[in-house]
Image 1: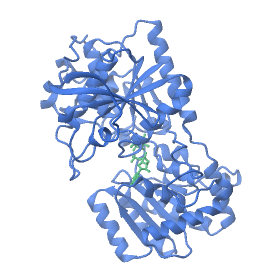
Image 2 (image 1 turned 180 degrees about the horizontal axis):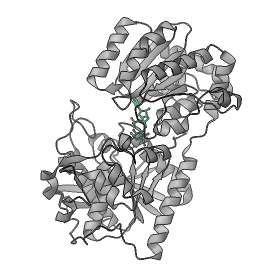
Image 3 (image 1 turned 120 degrees about the vertical axis):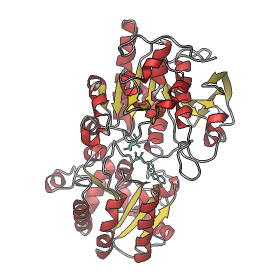
Image 4 (image 1 turned 30 degrees about the vertical axis):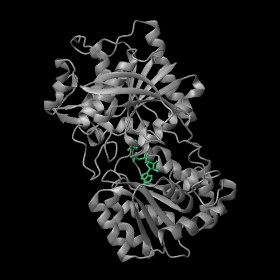
Length: 498
Ligand code: ADP
Ligand code: GLC
């Protein structure tokens, strides 16, 4: 079976978070089910630069811009790069400029990505056509709208990685999307007087998945539905929660080139060497005491403001804290204040650096994730594999991937971390306290680390769920003439490209 995945980021070429880890790992994991994934990715400078060995597939016009498609094989991944300098060749990240401000034409940049995907699904590429299209997040969610508008019948799956990012834009941009007029309405894209790309995907995809079963339930109610709970409820019967896996080649303490000493669960003692390197790299005082770390976007979702009030408690108990991340200026300022207050005990590394993230997992004793909500979370899964005990808010994927070290779980030898009530500073502190009490009993801590490191969150299990969903939809499309999700009016057919 051939799948066209459509993504706005992909590891190792361009990454702002876990989405890239997933789009980079899933194609490799799912290959064992005879499913071949080709991923369409925008030609940002950070994508075009390293992929010099490429073959041109097509030239075409996309929402008024000249574009080309290139075929590239990169580190085991089969990619189609959408080269459209007018939309993607600019400084900054995939979504923001150098000052962290959203590119003003993001609606056009990602509508173009979606439209290019629809063109490919309709047969634009010589000798290759997918059997199913897999969209990731709002940036590619319009693909099913373009497919439907052109009358192209092919199954589509939308994976929601984070409902907080919806692709909401003023209706004034609608005419430039080149979609049928009735798509502007409440059944399709209308969203509180604006238009919403993610809503189009939720309404029109044949199946909607999200990245953990818990989050799939949470987003159906107001608290975490972020305004889309009603729309999601209309597609409840085609919603699935599939927990993410991790790429166990990229995140493997036994072979990781970014860390000072490789180890596995039988040689946990070697983590000491990584601790020394980490302490040195972060300018922390040498000496005993647990090291807690955070590797995260510094945002409200991730609850960094909940962490600040517990820092004095961490330091008073003789432990240390490292925070590595970038994001909200206010959070950065608060954290830097704590560094001044506790030199040698608190270290804050502002920035985004893959190697540092790996070393932190290998050298820290515990990783804290105070997220207010977390669709899946990959950091806690990397932490498990590296024997850094996760301390996590009980929400979304965190709640279902970490087993709290309560007495029952400890005696059953299944505990892997500490949970607290998400959003509660008090309970966060209580969890840190419980972690420190356990840390003071080396044999028990070692047991917990071993259990954590043995937990299996490789992609094998999750890829099987995706494979079975894709196969079911593909099979259905073969058996009965495929009809995309019905909307009230049959849409007028539009030409996809010139
Ligand atoms: P999200 O996608 O919401 O940010 P995840 O836990 O799913 O959260 O994924 C975060 C990914 O980004 C992980 O691979 C993590 O290691 C990485 N990451 C986050 N912050 C940094 C940073 N400052 N430097 C390097 N990697 C980071
Ligand atoms: C999003 C979510 C995160 C998830 C990641 C990959 O960024 O915030 O929880 O792990 O996507 O699916």
